[in-house]
Image 1 (tube, rainbow, N blue to C red):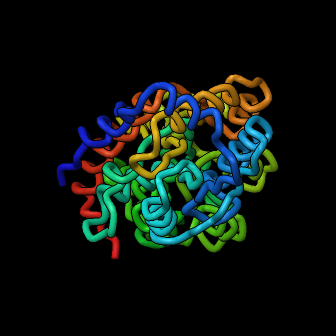
Image 2 (image 1 turned 60 degrees about the horizontal axis):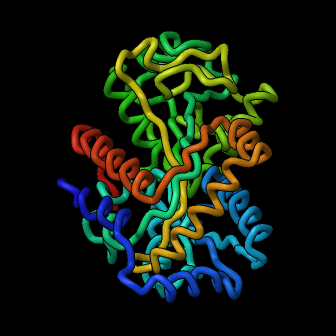
Length: 325
């Protein structure tokens, strides 16, 4: 599937053709009432955690409440469609994450086109993932886990936040490269998947660190490897998957989007205010605690990250013949 990559980059770079004085006045007046940030995933997951951090910062900076509204389901598509249909006035925003980009490659019958209908505002965080297992799994390294999975084909359950989510896609890439047979068990969000991993109902998850880092620190879950290209500061003693499967890499991103045709001056104001938050030591430290790294930058820069990511994972989706209902 060839995705309209250029469209997303054009949306990111576009500006409304309005007189400068009109644009300035509108930006100064915004926001005049509460703003909704729609999260297409359940409370407690990585996307929700970051949305609440962002919303609190914006509420304090702009003097209006930025209210988090969870609309979970369909790999984030329910929440995305709600934002696509909302007025393009800056009062309904979307907390977007890697699953939104994956959906652009996975679904062909949606009522919207993500790369066309959602304008990027700013990238907030690059999300690190790790291969995390329940302590009952008799493996402490990636080679040991691969050997265990090969000795028990189809009996090792791999949880994910749902069909076509990063946890699923990153796991499928691992399965292809390692030559193992893991049974995919999709959940309705990362939080319930992690809960069942803690309970031992499933054995492994390719987990975004915001959802698992506290459990790892508490010794309730065991990290085998990071999916990033290099080791993580938050888990300095944990190797990368690429150390054992050269070329393997999987990271995510989180940021903010808005309905297309949202005035450029409002997008610019949000970008500026969120950028100020990312420069705040308390927020950057919190992102580091979650195992992430600060992104920031312009709407166009975020648009390029999203477009490049869609292109990369589309190839994996096609090769693994991953389908969603």
